[in-house]
Image 1 (cartoon, rainbow, N blue to C red):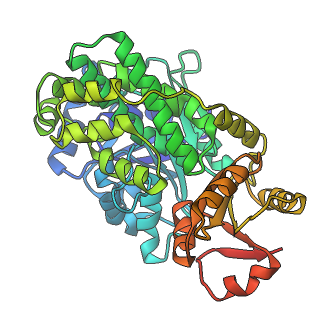
Image 2 (tube, helix red, strand yellow):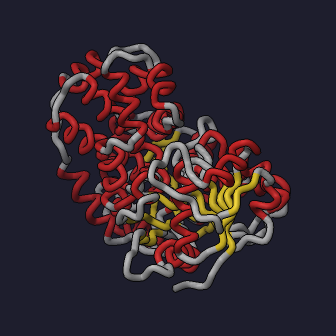
Length: 468
């Protein structure tokens, strides 16, 4: 059993309360915050939750509507509010959160326009006051329906943090309790925070698609199709953003997608089914009666697909249905009549396999490296230089300068893509485009050749530049 900790949970919905019960049973002291005083009072008095039948809340779990009470003096804070309220909650609680605080986010989503994941939203908001540079953020995600966790049914989840020591602290808090012979939660760790959060947000969209399929009267074959190809879309986007491929095959990836696309507890699946039966999106959300995160995730998903030039036909089709631009039946026809293609391109498969051999951790944190140039011919010296650049990080992108010759540009990009040390190749036309690549790909380090030193010195690109 791990050391008893004082934990504050921000959010009194089904997930927040189910986790509070789990953690209290693990021997920790819990305070659950609700923005609404009447809700906090009702939960404190009744010791039940209206959306968690069969759950009795321990009298040792405290409820409050005072953010100070929920946050101050806590060993760990959990953000368990819907994704659209994460930023506002962080702003409200910032005065009461000390620097260095361990913060665990269990909300799943991506903020539109900024395209930040939920841990990034929390970090961004807390850093505004200049007093929260050392907060320790963990994404907790996986195939976890609150209704089952509340009844102590076996569940597994992923604790994702770039600092493995912190990830393991959270792992112990959720996994080790005073009931060792009746374990409920098994927790795994992962350093790929972005990949874990991307899966958690986008799987809700694919669950909407699976629900629409059911609502149309389609069978298990169609649902399996949507789950599998939906995961392919999520994986394509994640790899383009520099995530680890293994994350998408794990609990936070395919595991969470399966449960969300098939379970009777899934709000997204239920909302999609109502849409497939003819309800408009807003009517379906109202009928579900709780937040449907897949609807909230669609704007950011479309922006990310556009930014990274990744084809996501299922997500785009669901977006069209939600916006009333296409009927559910038309979506089914559109997906089934797309141009024929291979399931896996051999060249892509080989490149991904080889590049996976070069992934490794640097102090538990992914480091993204970018190099740029014309690369008119891949000489032995250039290949060695690229390999050395890859060794400075865990992921290498190559920006290829467009010289106006489209055929030459395509050939150069294809040659670079075939190298096992290269994870991403993209053409750039000017310095503004290069700076966009640094921002969009979340680059940590740019490596320049000696002959490029003066050019980089004349342009501030916002990250460290090493000349070698």
